Image 1 (cartoon, one colour):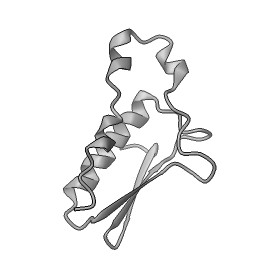
Image 2 (cartoon, one colour):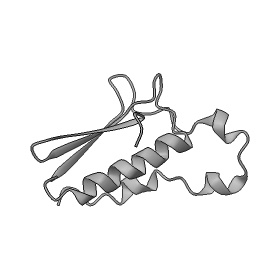
Image 3 (cartoon, helix red, strand yellow):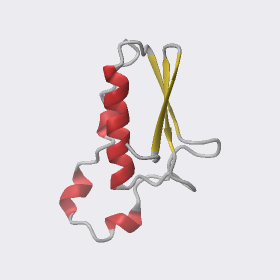
Image 4 (tube, one colour):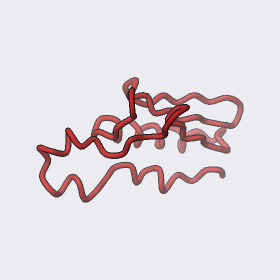
Length: 91
Protein backbone atom coordinates (compact mmCIF):
# COMPACT_ATOMS: atom_id res chain seq x y z
CA UNK A 1 0.00 0.00 0.00
CA UNK A 2 1.26 3.50 -0.79
CA UNK A 3 0.68 6.73 1.09
CA UNK A 4 -2.59 7.37 -0.79
CA UNK A 5 -4.46 5.50 1.94
CA UNK A 6 -3.31 5.41 5.55
CA UNK A 7 -4.57 2.91 8.13
CA UNK A 8 -4.26 3.72 11.82
CA UNK A 9 -5.62 1.54 14.60
CA UNK A 10 -6.16 2.73 18.15
CA UNK A 11 -7.67 0.30 20.60
CA UNK A 12 -10.39 -1.48 18.59
CA UNK A 13 -11.04 1.37 16.10
CA UNK A 14 -9.34 1.44 12.72
CA UNK A 15 -9.28 4.67 10.74
CA UNK A 16 -8.83 4.40 6.98
CA UNK A 17 -7.75 7.84 5.76
CA UNK A 18 -7.76 8.92 2.11
CA UNK A 19 -4.65 10.97 1.42
CA UNK A 20 -4.68 12.31 -2.14
CA UNK A 21 -4.75 16.10 -1.85
CA UNK A 22 -6.32 18.35 -2.71
CA UNK A 23 -9.65 16.56 -3.31
CA UNK A 24 -9.06 12.79 -2.89
CA UNK A 25 -10.10 12.11 -6.47
CA UNK A 26 -10.63 8.35 -6.79
CA UNK A 27 -8.05 7.22 -9.35
CA UNK A 28 -7.18 3.56 -9.89
CA UNK A 29 -4.18 3.69 -7.51
CA UNK A 30 -6.24 5.15 -4.66
CA UNK A 31 -9.02 2.62 -5.28
CA UNK A 32 -6.54 -0.27 -5.20
CA UNK A 33 -5.00 1.03 -1.98
CA UNK A 34 -8.46 1.48 -0.46
CA UNK A 35 -9.31 -2.15 -1.28
CA UNK A 36 -6.01 -3.25 0.31
CA UNK A 37 -6.74 -1.17 3.41
CA UNK A 38 -10.18 -2.75 3.74
CA UNK A 39 -8.62 -6.22 3.45
CA UNK A 40 -6.02 -5.31 6.09
CA UNK A 41 -8.67 -4.06 8.52
CA UNK A 42 -10.90 -7.09 7.94
CA UNK A 43 -8.00 -9.43 8.67
CA UNK A 44 -7.41 -7.80 12.06
CA UNK A 45 -9.61 -9.59 14.61
CA UNK A 46 -8.96 -6.81 17.11
CA UNK A 47 -10.80 -4.22 15.03
CA UNK A 48 -14.38 -3.69 16.14
CA UNK A 49 -15.19 -0.46 14.25
CA UNK A 50 -13.92 1.37 11.18
CA UNK A 51 -13.88 5.09 10.42
CA UNK A 52 -13.47 6.02 6.76
CA UNK A 53 -12.06 9.57 6.67
CA UNK A 54 -11.47 11.85 3.71
CA UNK A 55 -10.63 15.18 5.29
CA UNK A 56 -11.92 18.20 7.15
CA UNK A 57 -13.58 19.92 4.18
CA UNK A 58 -14.67 17.03 1.97
CA UNK A 59 -14.62 13.26 1.82
CA UNK A 60 -13.69 12.69 -1.83
CA UNK A 61 -14.31 14.51 -5.09
CA UNK A 62 -15.48 11.32 -6.80
CA UNK A 63 -13.97 9.65 -9.84
CA UNK A 64 -10.74 11.03 -11.30
CA UNK A 65 -12.14 12.30 -14.60
CA UNK A 66 -8.67 12.99 -16.05
CA UNK A 67 -7.74 9.33 -15.61
CA UNK A 68 -11.07 8.18 -17.04
CA UNK A 69 -10.65 10.21 -20.24
CA UNK A 70 -8.36 7.57 -21.79
CA UNK A 71 -10.08 4.51 -20.30
CA UNK A 72 -12.42 2.21 -22.14
CA UNK A 73 -15.98 1.69 -20.91
CA UNK A 74 -15.23 -1.58 -19.06
CA UNK A 75 -13.10 -0.19 -16.18
CA UNK A 76 -15.70 2.49 -15.48
CA UNK A 77 -18.47 -0.07 -15.00
CA UNK A 78 -16.77 -1.88 -12.11
CA UNK A 79 -15.38 0.55 -9.52
CA UNK A 80 -13.09 -0.99 -6.94
CA UNK A 81 -14.55 1.14 -4.18
CA UNK A 82 -17.16 -1.61 -3.77
CA UNK A 83 -14.72 -3.14 -1.27
CA UNK A 84 -15.98 -0.59 1.24
CA UNK A 85 -19.58 -1.71 0.75
CA UNK A 86 -18.78 -5.21 1.97
CA UNK A 87 -16.79 -4.14 5.01
CA UNK A 88 -17.95 -6.49 7.81
CA UNK A 89 -17.38 -4.05 10.67
CA UNK A 90 -18.29 -3.66 13.37
CA UNK A 91 -18.08 -7.33 14.16
